Image (cartoon, rainbow, N blue to C red; front, side):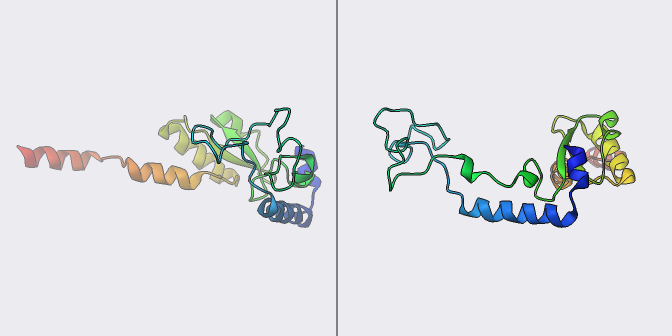
Length: 159
């Protein structure tokens, strides 16, 4: 797939992404049958299988069911809205296999802060786009690291 993405021109990729976005605006929300009627039945899609089901029979006025015709363009499938192919990264070795022209990375949620910083630094040096960099900055704001000098000040003032 990567060879195909490399051969695709920027115009073709951009056009496919725009088409996918316009189609997704027109695509209906596929809801589970009777989910609007009962609180206990969630909206998560389940195929209607009843013998008299109006949704299965595609009766006019009933919600639509997913079909092949609602699919997006083949060129845009599996791509992030930025146009890159998403790759989940757990360690530095996996970073060596990334093609910065076609692929972008997401650092896995269970990677610790020490290894995360190393991965980000190496990715920036290699020119690899990081998709969840904003989320990682938010995590750092929530749990800021306390420096040693601040610890000494707090212990001396409490004595």
